[in-house]
Image (cartoon, rainbow, N blue to C red; front, side, top):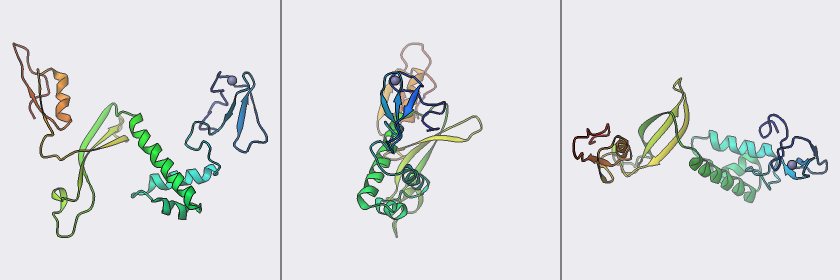
Length: 201
Ligand SMILES: [Zn+2]
């Protein structure tokens, strides 16, 4: 309740705060006094249409977000003490929500990027960056004024050694960002205009 309406109930249809709580409904349904529209506390959220206690959901979110390796549906089942289908549903919904969240936000402000490799090394294979079994990523993290990390984006790339394509432009400064997208940027400046900051990489 505090999370959804920190300053008190507000009808999603008309914005009125006057309401009554329907006593018989276990899902905490509010009825707007103006338009009589009924709204559940969890309507429009991940937990909509679920009869599981929210505490189970919160525990599942904690387990998924705190684990270094993502727990399987089977692991969730054991931790939460729920049935197989329920564990699968929770797992599926959390993964969906996390994937959706990726597209909702863009990094802004100060962003630090670095190369990252994910995956294990095979026995007898090359170690470190040269390992064939590792997937290269560009990791980008937005940081606040104190340098604390905020959001992170991980984008898989073919590799860090060769550009994925060659881009020719007229050298306008904004095309410098092409280099950041792992592309070789060749500014071709006609006339007297000076090339922008995005030079050949
Ligand atoms: Zn209303």
